[in-house]
Structures are given as C-alpha cells and as structure tokens.
Length: 101
Image (cartoon, rainbow, N blue to C red; front, side, top):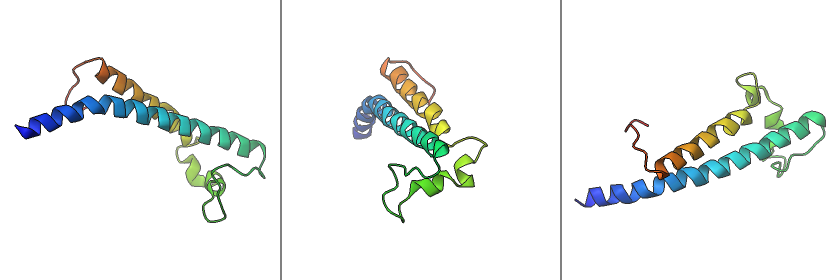
C-alpha cells in the first residue's frame, strides 16, 4: 500500500516537472540558437558559453557534429522542449494518457 502512495505523489509532481524543465530547456535552446546566429555572422564572435580554452562551446558550434542532421542541433531543442511543456499541461488538465506515453 505504501508504493501506491508514493506513486500518486510522484504522479502529482510529474506535470509540473515537465512544464518547468520544458521552459528551461526551450530558453536554453533559444539562447544557443541565438549564439549560433551570432557566430555565423561573425566568425570571431566569442559565445557566452565559452568560459576558457578548455570549456569552449564556440569550437563545438563550428564542428560537423553540431549539424548532425543537416541543420543546427539546437533546433531540435526548440521543437522538443515545447512538446514536454505541452505534455505537462495536458497531464495537469487531468487527461488520461496511455501508460507507454
């Protein structure tokens, strides 16, 4: 019986977690996308995520892996994180979804 109580408490927090993580992820993807545009305009631009020569996202943004599917990878985050937010809102509204989802 204790497991059912823990599960229901967890079920109550999942929609809020999805919404918060979706918002934060979408904001971060938007920031990285803007940094990518700035880097494309000016090759000498130093992105804000480049802290030092070892932790440098500018060199990663210029690599082939940053365009794994033929477009900038942050675009996946711009699409995927709002999906998480939507799922959280749907769960918060009380909709009954399939277990696999």
